[in-house]
Length: 79
Image (cartoon, rainbow, N blue to C red):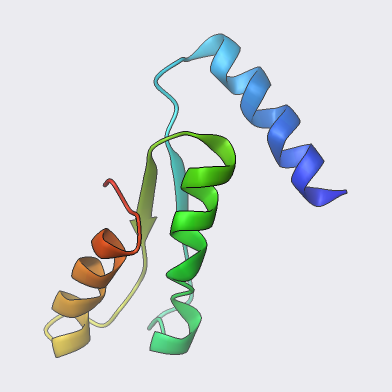
């Protein structure tokens, strides 16, 4: 199961670096708002009990390029 693989990898990585951060984001350019999947941030944070970062490739200078990071923060992103 994919979640088991992620969990096992995170446990291994934490044994090497206890300051691990889970990063979530959509790497297509430009990121479409429907691809941001911000709801996944809180899921990841709760499932793995680790800080969560968000990254995307929203086109710079647009309203969304300023709004999506704010939405990400309120959706559970720490970074």
